[in-house]
Amino acid sequence: MAVYTYNYIPDVFEHYSRFSRKITLERIDRPKVPIMFGNNHILTTRIWCLLDSGADNIVLNSDIAHFLQIDLSKAPIFKTGVVGGETIKVRRHNLNIILEGKTYSSFADFSDTHPFPILGRNFFELTESIVINERAKQIKIVMPSKAN
Image (cartoon, rainbow, N blue to C red; front, side, top):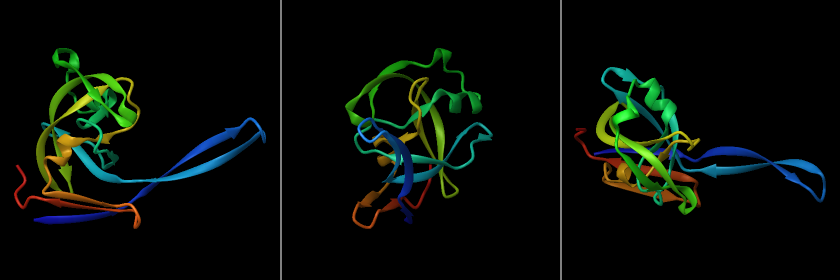
């Protein structure tokens, strides 16, 4: 088994208050995992993906499919759940998921409208276990000893 530990990664958002008429910055620490995606011999760089146990599947923007030279025009269309319980239309395609140099075969749902990469429950199925320590703001992922 391989064990990987990651600290949460901060996202920063601007917030405008109509009452004070001020713009403030809000920091939200999120559980993210660095993943490379591959198709044939084409690989992305490491992309920090939000770990989301409420999402049905891995959800990526269609721009990543274009980069990986995946033709989505004939890919089947599905509906999938994403952050906040929203449902979006996606096109599903197989691809490789590379975590710390080990390759796992799975699929991703590609969307033109979803702006950030999500690791949903089909990513969780690749693992032995995932422990999210909210207090320590840390993730521990245990992967099987053999990648597929």
